[in-house]
Image (cartoon, rainbow, N blue to C red; front, side):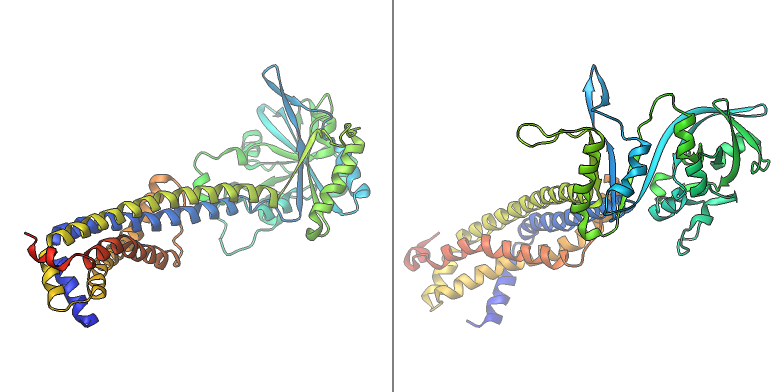
Length: 431
């Protein structure tokens, strides 16, 4: 029997039981649609992780304080990271090219009769270039194709210089809303304000900013509140005791990141008097984070999430495969007498195997094609309901279809073999 005749006979077998064939395809449709949609969600999760950490440069080591839980509150584990720790790091750590530092304090500002509670950020002079490079915020209405620079963030005036940071100059730069609150629309540049009863000269005002991610813009007003001042001034004026400083070290050579971390470890252990225990282990009061560390951990979590989704889709395909096997076994039983007649007139076992295997493959192939269409249509709906991003990769379509076809072969093989090995005499006598 030729392949074309076998294919025609298989199609006739499927068409003779349209409802049963359609219900059998349903399991494959659901399985294939699930594979495509789940892979898209997994890819979207990975992209979200990568984009959420794009602000953390590949040459950066972020250094923070370890904390312990004491009496229900988190307390510093040892010595605080200080302004002096950051200042001396460049000279004492060979692979560290430069250091950014930041400290956050809270205070009450006053200008004339206007008073406002503000968050004061003490930073280095390169805070605005760092803000531009991070690509987290931008001036409202900024064109997407236009690159950000320091001047883009300034509405008026200037930012403080490295010399002013070193000297502890009593200058500050106001955020957009804080400038409106204190000066009611007048130009603040050159004027003085009082911050915790200390005079501070306003040298600049920032533009009104928004998040670069549209999803984060709703209700996000704090980025336009507060003020910036040299970190040396903030340490001296805003705190009675030594404050905790957030330190970011920039490495000269990204390929030597691990060596740089070891050098920073050694430097901070010496400054914080951290000695090894009897087994040579250190109980550090600080931690270090790099882009590779954070991104690797989050990507591993996203990968695990993708595997779980793929496993759920695989279960759907297995259920669909079991449905194919069940229907094919019923079909073999119903056509036992027909099989006997075909064997009596010379049909070979391989002809019967090919016939029933083709029926199973056709069911799974048609179900796979419909499943691909349904999966593609479902991707935006699932992403919206899940509140996440879904990214369809073209390679997932042939993968899902191939798995569906393989399901038809695997689950259709046993019924086909069973049909081929029926006893011809018993099959002819079957009622």
